[in-house]
Image (cartoon, helix red, strand yellow):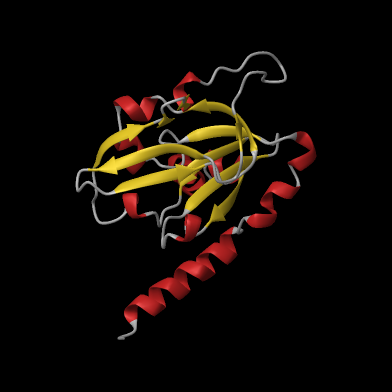
Length: 182
C-alpha cells in the first residue's frame, strides 16, 4: 500500500522547472512564424533561455547538424567570462541580441535570440558536444543560455513577454488558421 502512495505522489509532483521557475514566452521572434522562445525566470532574477515546445527545431523529427555561438567575427558567446559577486565581465545583451545559430541537417538555420536585456552569465557548452540534449530536454539540460537582468529592470523585463495562457492562445489561433482551407 505504501509503494502505491509513493508512486502516486511522484506522478503528481511538479517538476523543478514548474516549481521554481515562471515560464515566459516570445512568439514569432523577429516576425518569423513559429520561432518561439521560452524564458524561465527564477525568483532570484536569473533567466534561462530555452526553445519553446512549438519552435520548428523541435518539430517534425528534425536533427541538429551544428550549433554555433560565434555571432560575428569579433563576437563569440563562448568567450564570455564572468567573475565576482556582481558578475563582472559578462557580455551585455539587448532583447534582440543573437545568442547562437542552430543549423539542422536539412540546412535550415535558426538564430536564437536573448529575448531580454541583461548580462550573459553562461552559454550551454554541453549542447555543442551533445546537440540531442536540445531536442530531448529543451527546458532542462538543453537550455541555450543563462542571463541576469539588471536589478532595476528585473520587474519590467516581462512586459514584452507572454505568460503561458497568452502563449497557448496564440498557438491555438495558429493551429486553427493552419487547419482551415484557404
